[in-house]
Length: 92
Image (cartoon, rainbow, N blue to C red; front, side):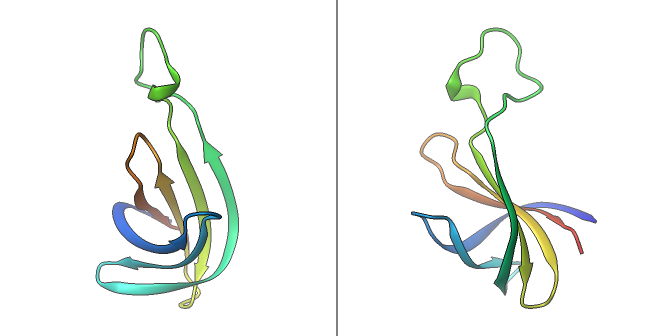
């Protein structure tokens, strides 16, 4: 496993999160399979005091297999009005 944590550009259908491909370090990876997905709505561990729903994570995680037979974990951060895609890890 290799930790990456870099913003990436993703080609996807925003209605159903149907991921087609992503670009990382000027290279396009075609998604061949979505292995698993989950949502994270937890509060950050560093948060203290009163908690509101606005402080929660709003992330959709995906483990995908690419056309290069590599497996990656990425997520869509939906906090506020932003929509940031992050390549979190290379799993194989």
